[in-house]
Image 1 (tube, helix red, strand yellow):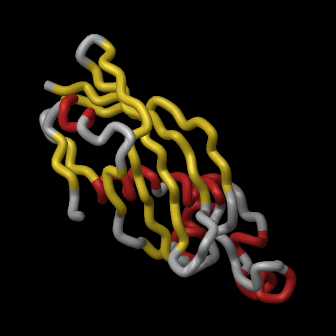
Image 2 (cartoon, one colour):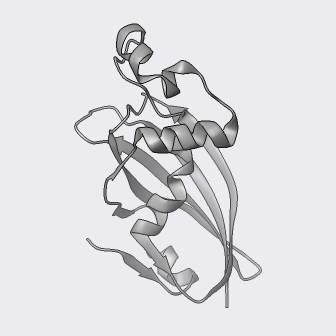
Length: 154
C-alpha cells in the first residue's frame, strides 16, 4: 500500500471508515526496555531481569512495559502517513485503550490504522484513528485504542 501522503483535511476525510494503512514491523529490544525503565523509574523485574524472567515469568522472557509499546504509536503512525502542509500536530487523547497481551523482548510489532472520525474545528482537523498494534506471529494484538490528533494545516 505504501505511505499515504496527506496534504489537507479532504485527504484525511477520504479515508473515513477505511483503513489508512499498515506500518512496517519494528522490533522491541532489551536495550529499549532498559532505557524506558531508566526514563520512567519502573524497574520491575518482569521488564529488566532476563534471567529471573526466564525462570519465574509465565512468559519465560522479559516483556516491554505496556507504556513503552504505547509510546511507539507516533513512530508507527508516521510510518503509515506523511502529512504535509501542517503548522503543528498535537496529540489530543487516547480512548478505549485495551492491552490484550504483552510484547515480549525481541517481538516485532506493527500498527494497523483506520480513520474512525474526523471533525473540522475552525480549520483544525481533529482526527480519531482506530489503531490496532499487532505482534508478528500472534493472533491476539498487543493493544488497540482510539487515538485523537489535531492537525493545524497551513
